[in-house]
Every structure is written in C-alpha cells, then in structure tokens.
Length: 161
Image (cartoon, rainbow, N blue to C red; front, side, top):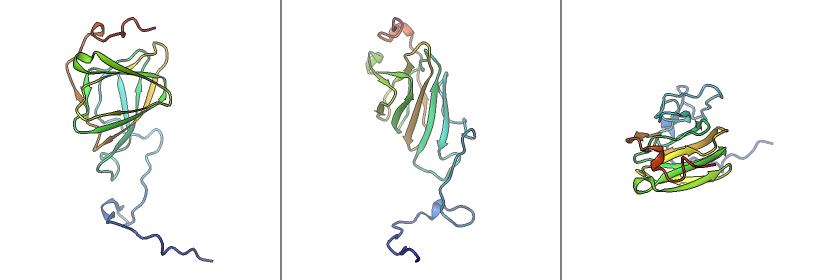
C-alpha cells in the first residue's frame, strides 16, 4: 500500500536551497571536513558545521568551539548575532559587564544565551582539561575582537582553583 503523501504540503518557497539538480535536500558536513575559515579569537578554535560559507544556510551559523586548558579569550562581541551555546565538555566562565566585573560559570550540559553586541570574555576555568562548546548564531559567526584586558583585571581569574 502506497503512503498518502497528500498531507505533506510545502508552505513557502524553499527553492533558493535547491541543489544543482533542482532538488531541495539536506546538506551534510562530514566529520573532519568542517571549515575552520570562520571568525576567530586567539586561542579559540571555531569550526563550522553549518554556515553561509559552505551550505545554503543564510541566517544561521552552527559550530563547535574548542578551548585549551586555562584558556581565556580576548574581550569580544558578536555584533548583531544572537548566540546560543551548550557546554559539551569542560567548565566555562563568561565575564561581562562594565570592565568585565561580573561573570557566570557553566559546566557540561549547561546552555547559555549571549545577546547581540554584549562585550564578554570566554574562559576555560579548568587548568587541566579542554573545554568544548556547541554554538549557534544568527545570522552568522560574527566575531569583533576588542582591546585586551589584564588577567588581574578579571575578578577570581588568577586565583581560581
């Protein structure tokens, strides 16, 4: 018996996502083939799984960010991009606020939303293990690096356990 597909009706026009064959299909980025030519901050490795650079996506960046043990980023923001993050492994800290005097800590399994244009510093608070984030941004991976701040200017950073 043939399935009744009449209930599956396309709403909207997704033809801009069509492959050269004319079919609209999912696009897979294979493990180990993720592009690394995306916005970077020294010490943070960002690889792109879904982005405008290598898929038909036009309003989404989704990737993985890796930080070595004890890493902290330069201050930066992500322009107009809304950012969602998930701590896949490790322990993270994000400094924010005037002069980066405030911070939040996260661990494996925690989610975070970072609003557009919010200056922040991303840190791996573990001195011995790497930190891995899954990150999604709209419209793409915008990274605007800001002037560096001293380690001693970040409360509880230098003397963390």
